[in-house]
Image (cartoon, rainbow, N blue to C red):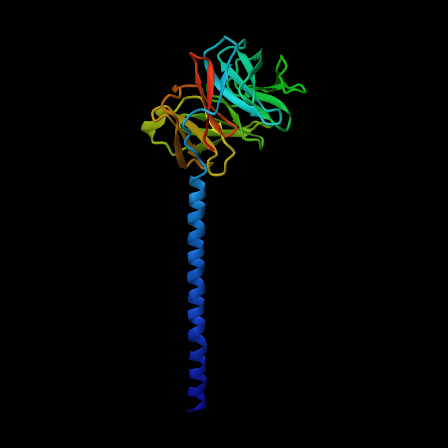
Length: 279
């Protein structure tokens, strides 16, 4: 065998096993990547839960107003706060973590949205004119009267209940679009178009939305037609819908909220919020 043929044969003996090894490693990587993707996919869709009944109910002791608009939660004190839309004399009710009523105050503004701000340890919200207000909390987490004005003329759509994402952004829903801006320096609204067919927009509860803080499930609306909580990611893509119990109260405007991993629906006749665990 000539030296040239010898080295050619040696090259083939070396390259062929190397090529096979590389292909084997590449195939294994693809299998591992596919398995990881499937596990991630399964994990994402196993995050939501379908409730068979309510977890907590909040029965308002105040008597003014009809349209419950928001439930928010103070985890540090284990307190829920609710608000009724429609008049400055309508109440903010306070409940403990088990749903026991504690007290209420007059809101002092015709409020729509309400959230607990962990950074300032205060309640904040928006009124019908697009102004933001705050209520200081005492050592027990109870709000005082006379809300403080934070910002005027935030560009809020008519009657919208604004929500907050704990990173200083506020959100509102209006006719298939979600709008957001800074809560500390409100300015031009950014828009997120939700993947909702134009003929189905009317099925979703007007004026209200929730910001969940769950990655991939950031935005939640209530579909009154299908009695379900509909989840979208922060780019507006529809992710999943969680069917709520048939006996859950359903309404096409206001009366829906989200906090503490629960979707909340309000029964105006019973003056009661019902919280359904969806995460």
